[in-house]
Length: 73
Image (spheres, rainbow, N blue to C red):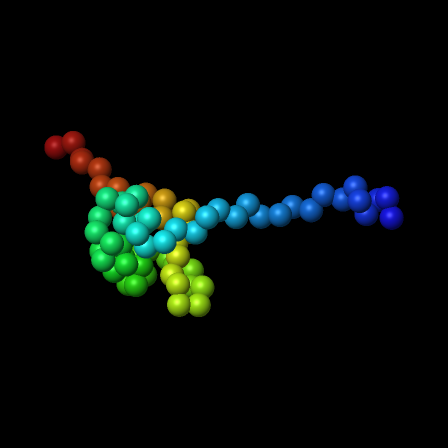
């Protein structure tokens, strides 16, 4: 029994899921545009019943994919 108490289980780190208005605020865009990005799949979503949420890492990935760098001419 004592060995059972000494086991450490790795639990995944769960971050807060973002609501559409939070996504909009973080991207500095309108709420409707944020929902459009989510509905069209540009930003992956998690559905919880009728609610739609975004994982923070998916928002970061979206931002990183959309960085446009100026090329030296």
